[in-house]
Length: 483
Ligand code: 4AD
Ligand code: MG
Image (cartoon, rainbow, N blue to C red):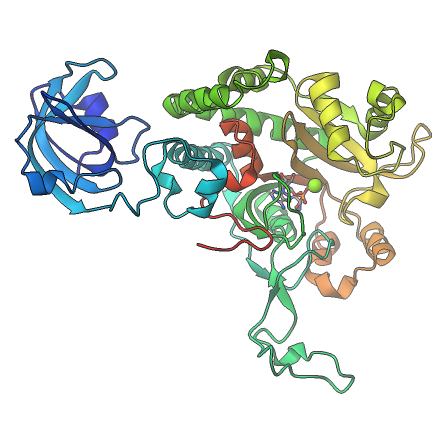
């Protein structure tokens, strides 16, 4: 199974045993009495320190041991003389696998800005911050699969290339093998997609939901967990052009069940991180405290671990869209015209409104339901008319998180064939284009519901990071697809 990793050495190896450490040098420090080399292999936030006597390492080898170089160190595990670590390696032999010229290697042991690190995304996993984020990303992905597996869901692989626009929002990346310099044309002068690879227009998926619904209509409870792509030109700290989404879809679930599942699921994965990633979370908590030192006390965020425990231990607030609008209309920022966007029934809530509800009014995660039909996707179940509401609503549900805004979007689905088709006509979607989707409403239709959790938004919340480009290894955003 390969060499023993630093994480294991630090937790399992006994003092006096011989160990072999393979990893990258974080720092080298020479004093009169000893040479200290801090090595990290990414298995844990903690380095292991190798100690050599002056003159023990040949001068020309020692020169090659610099920050970023890769080593194999053999030695005896001993109790550490210094503070800061319980054990260290008394070096008997060292081999340099690869050097890192200090004049060129950009990750010198000092503080680098997140902006700079984004420009060297190929190397940033070697920093404490990014290795902690990547380990958390892994742990959360594992927890997602564990949660659904343990609750009777099946992992369904929905296609990446599709011919439909699941969200009906038209923000898709085209997939084609046509020669862009010599596009085939129809007699009317339109691009002839019959000549294209699939014989039709195709794009990268914006959501696995429609195919997920097909799965739920056979396996009852499924989930997808895959990359999704949106060509929305949103240069924000919350949007990526390529992001990962988890989409459970359940037969025989109504909106209430959907909310219960969403809340239980999110709490489970956060609890999993708290229980399994304490070292990395502690590191990130300190990082955040450090970053916010300049801010006045009342603007600083809650300590990271406290914030995560708060979410796990408290019920999410459940509110209808209509109630939320009432709260906003009565709010101070609305009355004092502090909101940039106007508030009235029917608007798509802006992030300033969501943040007010979550961070100022309720001070906890909020599930908003029963949105106006006009601002939501065609597939959502239509509510019976309600005299207390100014217009028709659908059984939509968005989960809003402090500091993040929308983390989950979902709904109960319209299972009535004719209502669904009528709605598609209203919004201009050709029923023939997704005839296969409509057949689930023709053959054994059933009440069902589901939602999508943006994986990177979850990681933003759990790590306390501020920019979504810093919680995915290689971010894709407008004008940015290096690496
Ligand atoms: O609200 P959305 O668009 O919902 C759907 O796609 C549904 N088909 C899901 C379902 O019911 N199965 O997206 C779901 C979530 C959002 O709440 C947000 O967390 C995330 O996906 N998301 C993005 N994350 C990063 N970058 C973007 N551009 C995102 N767009 C949506
Ligand atoms: Mg949404």
